[in-house]
Amino acid sequence: MTIPTSVVSPDLTALTLAADEAGLRVLSAAAWPETPDDVAATPLAGFIDSTFSPLVAEAAGRALRRRDAGAPGSPTSGSVTAIVIATTRGDVTSAIRVASAVDNGRGVPPLHFFQSVPNSVAGHLAARWRLTGPVVCVSGITAGVEVAALLITDGDADAALVVSVDLAVTDGDRDRAAAIVVTFPDVQAPPGMSGT
Amino acid sequence: MTDGSAVPSVSAARRGPGPVVLTGASVLSAFGRGTEALLAGVLSGRPAFAPVRRFDVSGRRVGVAAAMPGSPDLRTEVARVVREACDDAGLVAPDRARTPLFLAIHVHPDLARAPESDRPRLGPGAFTASVAAECGLAEHRLRTYTSACVAASTAIADAAAMIARGQADRVVVAGGYLVEADQFGLFDAGRVLALDGQVRPFSTGRRGLLLGDGIGAVVVESAATAQGRRAVPLARLAGWGRTGDGYHSVQPHPDGLGLARAITAALQRAGIGPADLGYINAHGSGTSHSDPAETKALRRALGDAADTVPVSSTKSLHGQALEASGVLELIVTLVAVRKGMLPVNAGFVGPDDACRLNLVLNDPLAATPEHALSLNAAFGGANTALVLGTP
Image: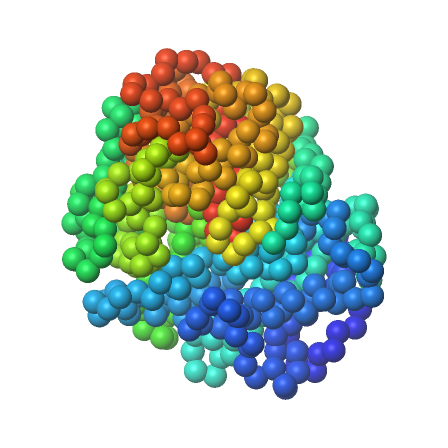
């Protein structure tokens, strides 16, 4: 599979390797940043202050669009796709923002309640792309891919979107995300999931 | 958004052939340390909610939670509860050294206030590794779940799925949440905390949820491995299901479609029908939208049995323990069923037509169910269902 990337994504490499290791077939893949044009993530309505959720939505959206490219009709109908978010530290920016508001006796911005867990952006993706499989958030790319493989093997999903995301926490570090859509070669592919 | 007809049925719930059992459990809640304190607390029918003294709540709309006295340290307490669960299961040191830990937590508790230079090492996975090391558990195959109020129940389902397939012999699954200022401030700002200081699941006049301390740990093990070391199972982990609503970032599907699929998958894996259930510990958050959605899910998945199976939400007693809810509530279900007494759905003031279920009211119900269901739902439309069976 070729993806239009001119920026090396170690996370995408790690996701793909872990998928290979698990015997999963990668239907599509994406990263952020992919090209030098990826300077700032597109804001996501309802999510504030932090790039965490917008980056998940961007990387996942790219991977899902590539999976569905050329497929007629509703590409996800008939399929149960799980969403697995893998992150080492979670939404550090939001956590710091909330802690600062609490410590300074200021009010906590109400929108932060809704983005306080990675499930929320997963739910956004689920509604936007009609993904009805389990929603799971774990620490680390290997764990994320293992969970995806287990959910498919166990029959609670027949495909999985695995998104890796981590925000910069020190100077010189950079926000990054990557996403793959995976299934097992022997899982019956519903219409529109034949992409390779 | 999606209508009912467009939602595919559960793919095809499958399970590996191996029976899965629970061989040890321990817990901490606002009722105190240990399963006996929890059982006595929930069977008392008296909610553990009280004014918060652990941190300043003067600027908040609500100042009530179910918290232990003082300011217990999360890492210390999680490690203690994990060790106690291993002791309860009779695991000797070499057993522990081969057993991985799956831990459900929100974030590393030190992250948000750490100096910038410390932040890279303050992931929740590092927290899990430090707990595992302190408890003499395996260094590898650790896993950290952060998926909100289904984090612990998903971890339990995954552990069971792996064991049933022979991918693991034994996993310790734990979850931990102790009421603290940041989540309290978020839930207060989100206007979901009950202004009247009580959680009233499925009741008319319900005002919302309240947070509660909860740390739980269970030893999930293959029946063959347990038998091989002459351990006596506490219960079978008979079935599990996990689904998503595909509906909204934070709201549940109003018809409970995803939760219904999770229940059906769990019953299917357990090889039982709705009429075989003798108790349901509901998600029952006590919020206006979630309880009717859950009622619809139960009616959709169980049919007529939804009129007769006893139901309570023990969040009305111990509060909402966030990432730890799934393991805390499974342990409540376990100890209640073993005692033969089902806890009440506290805070009930009157029926709501949108929430008609056979609620356990007034007094605990004497019953000895062969199968019981524990439900959880979370932001993102995430749902889980776990079925316990008598050993």
